[in-house]
Image 1 (spheres, rainbow, N blue to C red):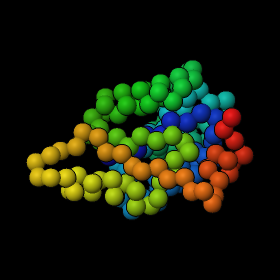
Image 2 (cartoon, one colour):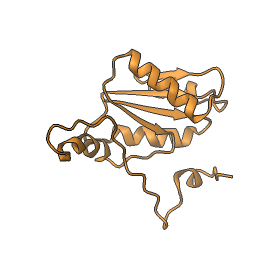
Image 3 (tube, rainbow, N blue to C red):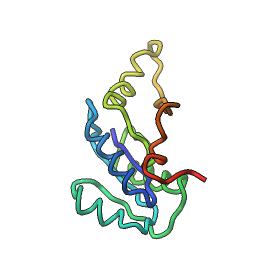
Image 4 (tube, one colour):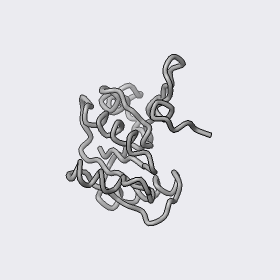
Length: 138
C-alpha cells in the first residue's frame, strides 16, 4: 500500500498530514510526496526532515489532477498494487488505513473491489485544517 500526497505551498499542512501517516496503526508500505512546484521551500524541507520519503518535485504546478496523475504514474511504474491518494490537508485518523484495507472483507464472497474510498469528515465545531493554518479558501 502506497500513500501518495500532493502538495503546493502548504508546508505546515503537509507536515501535519505526514505525521498522521506515521501514526497509522497499519502504516503505509511506502509514502510519496508530489510537490506541485511549491515556492515556499516545501521540497527542501521534506528532503531535509524526511530523507527516507520519496519526493517527486514537479517543475510546474499541474494542479491537483495533474499532481495525482504524476503520483499514480510513479506508483504504477514502481509496481504498487494499492494507492491511497490524498491532498496535503488530509489528516487521517490513526485507524484510517487499517479500516480501509479491511473494507473488502465486508463485500459478498467473490467480489473484489477496484476502488476503495475513505470518508472525509469536516466537523462543524472546529475549523478545517487549511483554516487553522491561516490559509482560508477563497
